Length: 67
Figure 1 (cartoon, rainbow, N blue to C red):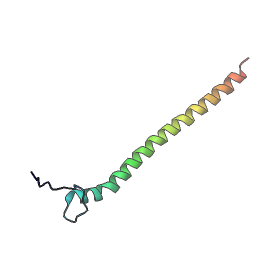
Figure 2: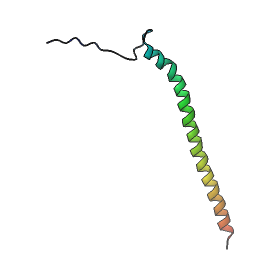
Figure 3: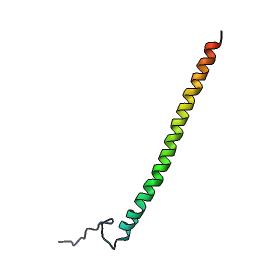
Figure 4: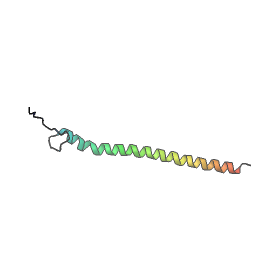
């Protein structure tokens, strides 16, 4: 028994494929949005870490002045 199965590629680069054009248009937009969100989160984490280091340094200075 022979079956006739056609292989379909959803994102095949054809001019009439709407999924391909949706991918082409949305990939840069979503990349910029995701990069901005990720960069903002990394900035928050780095700022939090540097704030903790600064507060620990101030606590060390205060503790050094105590008898």
